[in-house]
Length: 425
Image 1: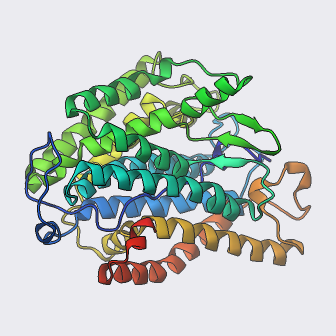
Image 2: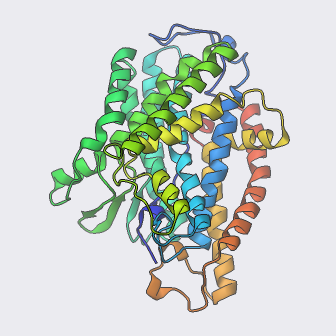
Image 3: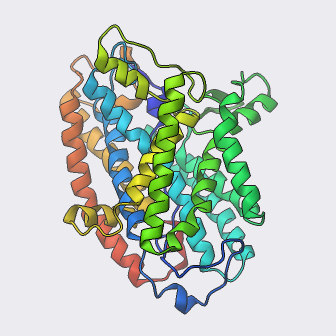
């Protein structure tokens, strides 16, 4: 049983977006932040594709968190030498969540900036919102995951990464777009060249927070930090989403064409580089003795911590294709997903709360006491516990059903009110 594995740390998934930031506006110059009047900013509908895709990955995200609370396993789901196809795919599909969330956070920042009178106002908001998210990660998200303030360690996950990325973006939005684009390409394409840092000194710890595989950082007198989401590569993902924001102001056919071509290009790059098997992922793929199916799983088994180039090519490539195809969707499912996508941070906190409460009730009934299975070592597991992927899927379906009506209520509440604090939840 794992207590601080990579999978265990993949619980966050964000969300930093203001409910009203992704408005579809007439085309504006992309080299500066235009200052249209407030009336013109609120006269346009939201970009439906952003809400639907964000809602979709939020629903999938919940599957991974439910799996950790309701069906932790003694093996790593990504270990193709031991895992089952069902367990591997259950974990693998959730890889698309964090990159899409962080990317769309950047796009939402772009739209938020269009509504503000100056870049100074944008910078101030990004700093305060970013620091607020950092505090929420440490004090609230960790509490919901570990069921106590007696932390085994302080998990630094996607909310942490988004918060500090906003703080960084507060300064970088003043730079020319060509420079930001160059920075994004260099970081995403080249950060896999950076060495892994062994944390031995405070300077090492600071560098590890910026870019490293997950590592424990000791703090005198406090629980150690477990930095699952290092800042440099995830910030580059947010910056990429910010830079692509102007595409959503284009006429729909042009926008769809650009998104589709970009998505295809990333997927082609993934296949080529993965096939070469030299660069772009921490571990190469290999022919598996268990057969062709597991060889294919090895090929698509990509590194998330930190997010490898191939990880981002695959996940963001699929995200861009989805964004190109759902703007005109009218099905009931798309509207459900859109509702979730309009209240991301509210959804995130509520789903962690309900998941924790549900797991506590179930373990109390099953084992006579509440057990946080996600943070329990194998030797401490209740003797009656057994793994069941079906149990996780049932719990996930019930959780999503329970989330819909509170999220719909909060969405309506945000649409009807303009309280300042709404932009922080």
